[in-house]
Length: 133
Image (cartoon, rainbow, N blue to C red; front, side, top):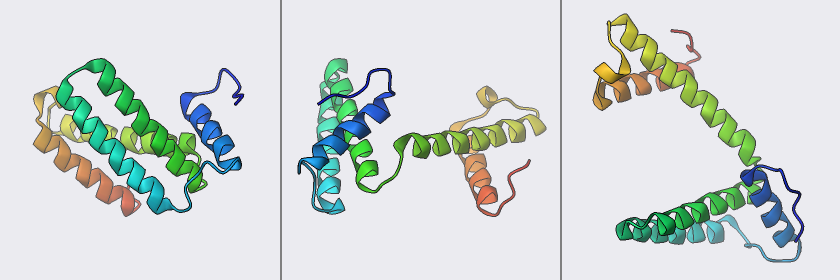
């Protein structure tokens, strides 16, 4: 299997699973992939219990790989999907920072409960189309 060098890991994983699919190494439906994803979650949790960073890293890589395979199966570009999520995160976290600044605080002067409440507020506002703060 030849995959061009210099591509992001997400793109490499996508192309690898695409090539494997072309020769019949693929699931018949999304349920099969989701079952595999659940197995990988269990393996990741077991690796966490070992507290061995190498094993945890390996299992985390497996989770990334299966997520990219799910994206490929659903014809979703994982780079774009992750990019949208990053942009959402930035907008919501900026909302947290601006809201805290209005009350004379910084995130380090806040707590998780307060920031999570603001996160949910930013989420609600973005769904209503009210993005500016």
